[in-house]
Image (cartoon, rainbow, N blue to C red; front, top):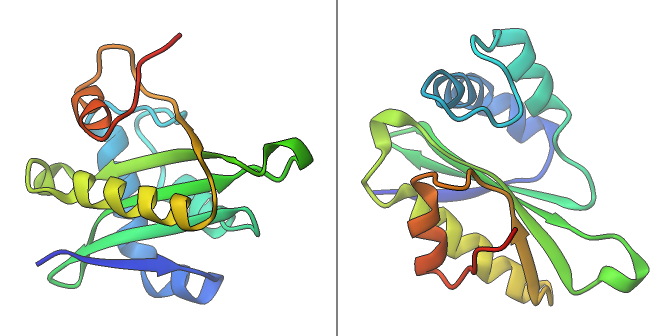
Length: 145
């Protein structure tokens, strides 16, 4: 069973630190650059997670059998004229947990949270011909650019 959890503070990051680092390293090792280079050093991933949270970033993780198998972020626009916008970022699924509904569950959850936050325009950045496009389109996203 997949459990979703919101990570709200550095204490929560520390609790899941090893799983988050491993997740990020494995995703990058399997070809998703996520704006980082392979091989991703442990320290690089750790630094990222220790600095990811802010008042405008909400982080959610997926856990199966006490192991972090996925994550997604919702970046809320803080612009005065952008209170209706948000970006979905860093949707990751551990390679061994792929094709098991993790990414879809995380995406659906973050879409629900965005709606609760009053965000009606959601953006995300992905590879043009990447495998995630089918998932995004199945949830109503439209390709552009």
